[in-house]
Image (cartoon, rainbow, N blue to C red; front, side, top):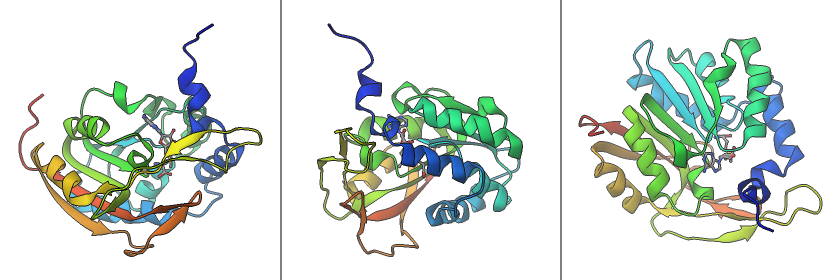
Length: 230
Ligand SMILES: C[S@@+](CC[C@H](N)C(=O)[O-])C[C@H]1O[C@@H](n2cnc3c(N)ncnc32)[C@H](O)[C@@H]1O
């Protein structure tokens, strides 16, 4: 018979002990900081006023919190992620470093409402079926800025492929999409933002293989020019 557990059944992020271990080590500061997290901090910092709120969407276990602390960015950090077991890891480890556990919440982008001053979303939208609906949520949430790091290129490419790095015996597919950068920028602008496309520092403009598939990493920095309408 049918059940309503399909999200968990098909969610690749719930089927990798390797990812859980890596994310726990990042939370405990036992793994190297991600270079893209360092770059996100640099891009964000000029727009932050003390006490601003920041929402990290698809935060994994919330270890971007460490990069913000290290960069001395005076924001109040909140993170959401659709994979509850990854949020559990952050709630277990990050309070030791000063993050209240309730600042990490299991939540899908699709269910997000409310406001935050800054929204950061790193390495998430490229693995969703498309960008319009989730990106609209991020743009409507952000009062000041949205910082994205995704696979973006002059020509888009949409693939739904096997993830061969999951736990033994798990056979699941994931979207690996490259979105057309100008189209995404036009979409962001239409929500009242000025947007700039910036090369990913570590990979330059060179493609990178991740789980065996080509990614074209770029940052988009979107700064709100008009009051949010809702
Ligand atoms: C590649 S990881 C990136 C984690 C983190 N942002 C980083 O930079 O390391 C992608 C994350 O997106 C989350 N995710 C996937 N679909 C989502 C959705 N619909 N809503 C919220 N999070 C989602 C996954 O659970 C996973 O933790």
